[in-house]
Length: 429
Image 1 (spheres, one colour):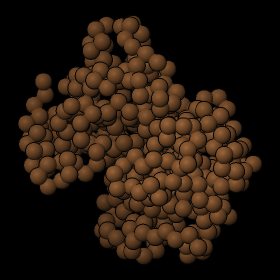
Image 2: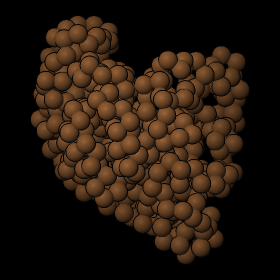
Image 3: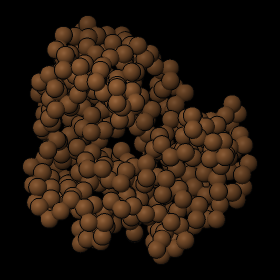
């Protein structure tokens, strides 16, 4: 067993001053019945906790560290820009450079607005869609997480078609949730029924083109194509939430990989090299309704922060100039997720592996996971036991079943093989 005394002491102290001892529930380790590791340092493919345990990092700050932690080029860019100041609250040349770069990389994005988080990006994109269409209702999908703004913390009612959603968090009023309709991922019929029931009322459909917040769930054949078609026919804005998949599954994200062009897209920390940042953008005619050009208000003092812009420009430029990054991380994905599939099959374990490129999830269920209902059949205690065993063996996974694993350019085949050897030991093969 690894020594975690310092992390345990810090967690005890943190609980006196921070709700639950953490600044984000994803760090709490409650889902696996353990105590959070407090991280002291990250370098390349490794994390080091306060007890000096060295772990292979399969979280990568929840996705953005696609080049690995503390990549030299990104680090140099940040070190240089901070000499000129940390924040100005005013326009900078780097904001222009970033916007041009994003628009060059993504054909669906003609204009882009920088914000400070993925939550802010999705919230702003939905407000923009409502302002553009003059409609109020939106469709989201069970199991797709789009941040913690009030109107998106909604779960489906008991029926397929309900008068709005039910708040999924205390503090969210029914009024905030009433215009949020919920469909089932990979079930186009559920989308059709909502469009039929609320004809001419739906401003936007928002979804993860590859779901990654109920674990990794790929879209099935024609699912996204049919959604694209019905949105076009109904005058509804199609929003791809690419906070996780953007610039990761391909340079142009899931929309490039899958060949589907949304009207608006949202992005998260990867666009800032891991700094606190996000963005939303899309068709010029839609984005022109955003203030100060149009009537949809959205603002942020720290939006386009020079440090985040420098880090993001450097990372995106590196990805653009080095397509081998994707070749390598996708190959590592095949090695890791394919290896896990072989192990659980050989062990006869009731487990399934879903993955797309460098992201994937090992589910502790014998059902094929294609939506939120099938994901929820997973044995959470089984995952918790596996998680704790693998953590002690030096592999740092997400402390919850319904999350993705992330690979980076810094990982090696030896890292993957070490992790697979530990997994084989756990499953007894």
